[in-house]
Image (cartoon, rainbow over all chains, first blue to last red; front, side, top):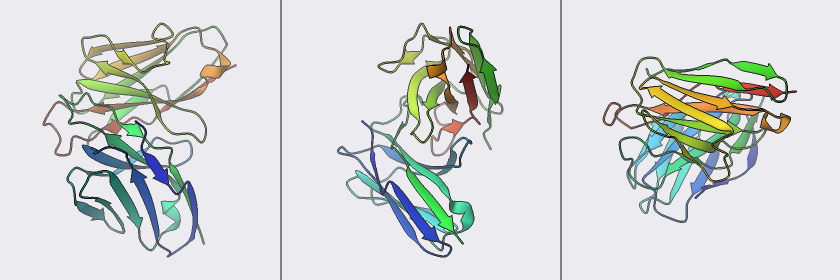
Length: 114
Length: 119
C-alpha cells in the first residue's frame, strides 16, 4: 500500500525550514527517506525503525510517531543543494532475510531558491 | 560503504530489440535485489523482487515474459527488456539488500539507474 506524502511540492528561500510528511493507514515496520535529483538515482538519507524515534544528520532530521503510521522529514536552514524530490519508502512488515521491497510515496518536490 | 552498480548507464535501441541491464553489488552479497521503474516526474514503481537462485516475484501488471529477470549469483541480477517498444522507455533502477544482519539498519542500496530510450 503506497504511503501518502505531503506536500506535493514546496518552494523555499535559502535558510528557510520545511517539513515533509509521510503517512500510512497501517502501522509500519520502517520508513526510509531518500532524495533524488533530476536524472539521478535516489540517495539514501535515513531509516526509522522504532516508534517515537527521531534521528538526524547535520540539518536534516526525521521522526517516526509512536503509532508508527507517520514519519516527518525536517529540513532546517535549507541550502540550494537540498533541492530535489524527496521520497519516503515504507515497509509494512519485518523483512524476512531482506526480501521485503520498499513501497515509495509519490514524492515531494522541493525547490530552494537564492 | 555498500556500492551497487548498473550497466549500462543509458541505452538507445530500436523498437523490437531486446536490452539487458546488469545490476551488481560490488562490495557485499545481496540475497535479494529489487527492480524499479520510474517515469518522468513520477515515483519509483517496484517491478519485481529478484532472489538469488530462484524465480523473480513480479508485481501486478508487470509482464514476466517481457521483463526477464535472472539472479545468477549473490552479486549480480540482470533485467532483460524483450521486444522493447517506445512505451518501455524509462529510468530503470535496481537496489540490493545485504544478507540478513549484514548491515545495521537493513537498508536498501540503489544503483545509479539505467535510462532506456526506445525509438
